[in-house]
Length: 291
Image (cartoon, rainbow, N blue to C red; front, side):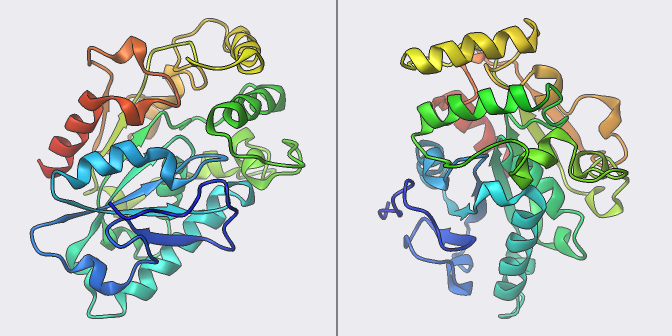
């Protein structure tokens, strides 16, 4: 696979890169025959390269892989608008995206970017299927203390700095906390009925390890504090099972073709940051996207 940009280097703006070429995506990158197009969307403070093990694995199964990089602090809705704009422009060349379609494979907040994407006019014509890994579909209901501690843990594990961060100043944090709009927060708007998603299958996958393995002392202390705030409910070390699963009836209107998967042997070893390292998850995603 080509070398992708350094994940610690700040991007100038939102970008869609082909993992085949390592460069910004062009219409021709979507034209390979007998390939399934898959766009990987990273989470808060992340980068597409954080999911490299997983997208390298799917590429060996014939998937034509792309990564969408965005400045997560700017917000979920802004990222969804940017992704829609990029795909819409690429589609102007012989309707290549609309004809070939893409599947989204999303980690954490990236799943909310994908769901926000589906509410944009005619956006669903580009989508085949959606997979979410550890996505906080219910948002971060534990408040800004929870989110600030979660960001500290992410900094330690992903080694991606987010200087000047406070939950009250970052748009994405407000969206996750449901404080971005007084009467219609994004998290609530994503539960609205969306007729365009009635034919789009979406699979949520969760992890069950409540320990964020391999962290130094700072990260371990963050993990202890997070578990105390999550109050021992089943979780992946960061996101509760009740938030990462789409099995609840509250999603019936907006995502009728939803399914949830947590019945795999490595479930109790999978935490919020190592979904990409589990072969069983990679195999299941590959088979589900093709089925």
